[in-house]
Amino acid sequence: MDKIKPIKVLIYCPRLLDTGGIESHLKEFIRSIHSEKIQIILWIPDTRLNELNIKWYRENCFKTYFQNKSRFGLLQTIFLILKLNFSGINFFYSNGQGRSIFWIWKMLITVPKWIHHHHSSGDENDRKTWDASYMKALLYSNNLIVCSTNISKEVGLYLNRNVQSIPCYSRQILIENKTINKEKVRLAFIGRLIKEKGIDILSKLSNDLKDDGIEFHIWGKEEFYTQKHFDLFPNLQYHGSYNSLDGLKDVLNSIDGLILISTHSEGLPISLLEAQAAGIPWIASAIGGISDLKTTDDINLLIPQNATYDEIKELILEFRKSLIEYKSLPIIENIKNYELYYSNEAVSKLWKNLFYDFDKSPNK
Image 1 (cartoon, rainbow, N blue to C red):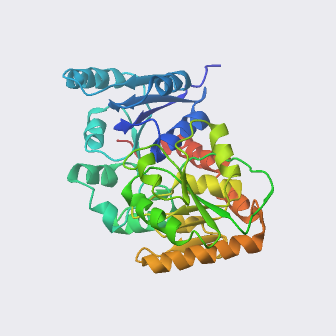
Image 2 (cartoon, rainbow, N blue to C red):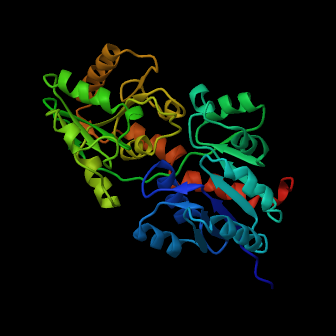
């Protein structure tokens, strides 16, 4: 009996960094999908990875193609496109946002199916960043995937096309049973240190709520904010970034709740997913797919996008009161919700069903 040929999936991501939401999703995607039945080929035209991450991708993919910006970039790209057209690829899976995505697809003339994965909110602010080339990617991909049902409805109406929802991959770490200290509730932000993530508001809140039994903590790589900024706020402890699963486990075991005050075009933030998976309550801006994660009104609070500073402060105090009433962690409702809809098993099932059914959909 002839051996069944594996499905080959070409992942094209215009730019890849060492850390971030897309980067975290992509690693878990590769870990979960790459196998003898589904082979992952990874192409990154603008590679901004350290050597350790490059090594990881090479060891965990069938093939990898890493480029960086140079005077030979165009020639390398043309040669690579010719090579990939003779590689028997079944799927072009584009990830992220970029002008090159649509044109690369047009040149991959032998690849029958195109899946585009849009990670951000799809709301009015997000749509302002979609140029003409990226709009073609959203309109003409065979399958357009977003990360939440809330986003799929809004983007589907805007584009007048079918939009499927598959959550981003995340990691589940179960925390130890612990009592919440009502004298010092520990709220944490985990993510990119940029203005749009509400770092200035968190800094101010840490001063204003220092006598209300709340301690603020931040984890993230120094970017637009550094240790020098956080030294000005004694009730806001900056811990730098963590670089391993054990590091994340230590973080989740040390906090009582997660906080995300954001004006960024959030899709389904990985930090909230991983807090949910651990049974940790959260309070976050009602952007993108965040409302999809909400289980009950007391352990997951949504901050309206137009909330004033004083309203945000009152919601945080309400959140603290709810935590104290729960007395201990983890919260089982959050864990059950994650395992049902967002776990590795649940997300992998959706992706694999999509790949295995590729012959049933129209070709290019």
